[in-house]
Structure formats: structure tokens, C-alpha cells
Image (cartoon, rainbow, N blue to C red; front, side, top):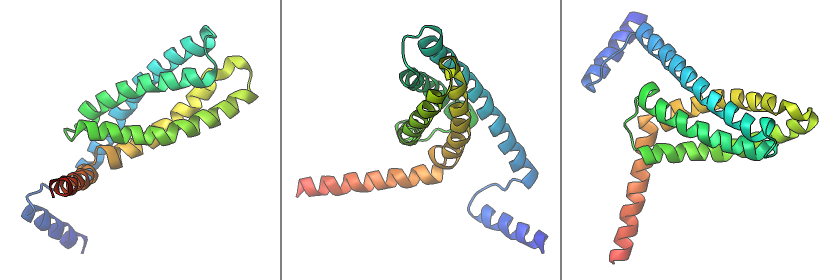
Length: 177
């Protein structure tokens, strides 16, 4: 029975002009994608920790949350650039993809700043990096899911682009009439 289902899926995919990957090949590809995302996230995390440490803990120039915010922005730019190019190999609309990342961070940053600030207030002053690390772990998991299933998912981004094109066309028709 399972063989028949796989054969039907292969025929349907072939009719659509798609290639069918074996379960093993797809799982290997997903595992490699997770490893790449993890590696780039670690490098972005180093950028975030160093910049946060310099701004908050080591120099005392800024309280926790502004230092955290600046360090997150620096790491997001780094992470987005490398994950778009190497992890997800996405050639889709870069401004749209970056806009979707901004949407994610518009939700994540207030939650992490308020939550992190509340946690940091209960800890000794020199443990700001521990709070930053906790927020980074939360960010790692949620951003991977957002990137994989929204930002770099061509089915989703194509629908969003079509909505914008349709809206622009309707606006143009209204102004022309």
C-alpha cells in the first residue's frame, strides 16, 4: 500500500514537472540546513554577545535593554545575509524577505526586551550576558521556524507578492479613472 502511495506521488510530481526526493535525501537536506543555520546563528551570536558585552557589561555605557537591542540588530543583519545565501539558498524578493524578518523582530524584540529586562532586574548586575544568552536561545528556535516556513518559503512569499501586485494594480486603476 505504501509503495502505491509513493508511486502515485512520484507520478503526480512528474506531471507537475517536479523531482521527487526520497525520504532519506529530504531528511539529510533538512539536517544539513539545520547545521548551517546553527553555524551561522552561532557566528551571529558571537557578534551579539561581544557587542552586548562591550556596550553593557564591560563598559557600563548602556543599561541592558539598549545594549541588547543594538546587539540584536547587528546579529540579525549578519544572520539574514548568510542564511539567505547559504542555508536556504533563497533568490526570492530580498526586500520582501527582509521585511518579513522585520515583522518577526517587531514581535520578538518587545517580548524579549521586556521579559529579559524583568529577568535581568532580579539578577546581579554582572549577569546581563546570561539573560542575553537565554534570549538568544529563544530567538534561535523561533527564528529558524519563521525563516524556514515563512521568509524563505517561496509558496508563502509568492502569495504575499501577488497580494501586493494585486493591490498596486487596483490602486493604479483607481488613480487612472
